[in-house]
Image 1 (tube, rainbow, N blue to C red):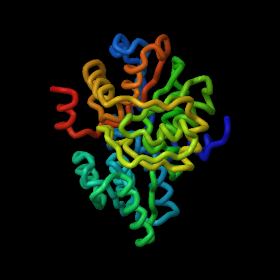
Image 2: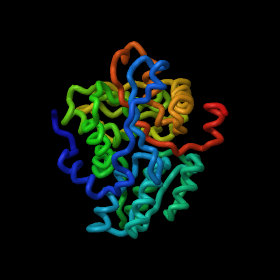
Image 3: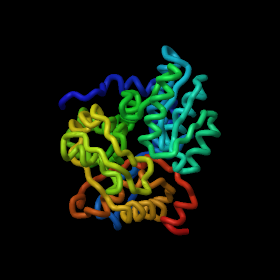
Image 4: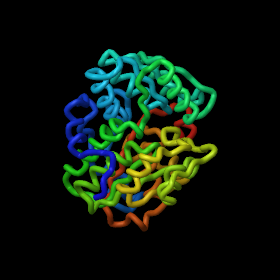
Length: 320
């Protein structure tokens, strides 16, 4: 495999500093989903932890290093999940955490950031504006900026999921990974391609937030002027060049799915797996729904990456 910014040795070492509450998450075959999807389906469940998403794996690595060697204050931009995770990890290590988010972010996510003791600053724009504001705070106050997907700790923390996948039995043919900024996809993809290169790595993004997928296909950064998707956790407009370079090495494909398929995926996970998930976590199921012939006869793993969802919106989408 070509080199990426990630190191398999560092990823293995990351498991030693991540709180075990985030590790060894459930991985199981969900036969109840299979009649609707036409293939063997296993779920890697990244919601059964204190922040209800995979992001805690990366923020544990960030916070542990800051507690040992770095500044005691840190700032990040977040659509909600990274902010919760950094607040949780920072609180446990005595760090002063500031999170910048759009005031249009999911209210449940914002409430949880506040409850975890972080300072929350809201901007009147989207996630890209929050990124700009977080960078300005870091520069003006001289504190550490954590930039999701660019900071290698966020990728290598997420990559520990990949270690757990390749150690699983039985083996699988394909892994479907939600694609936003790229930390999850590049992290898991790096491990899978290093240790199980025969497994196909497919990234999934909404049609309403296609920047990273278009960039992957074009092999250059492609930005968009806006996003239009309920999957707020992956709704970026401006891919990071270094992250795209990693993604080009580890991803076999990147696909876009429709909003209706995301909602149908959420409904399937609720009705047949008993899971309430946020839209980003249903992207893998959406991809299976949209291309049953491609995946027929395969054993597919999909990473259910988060369950921080506004319940009012959830009921409107999925139904009561």
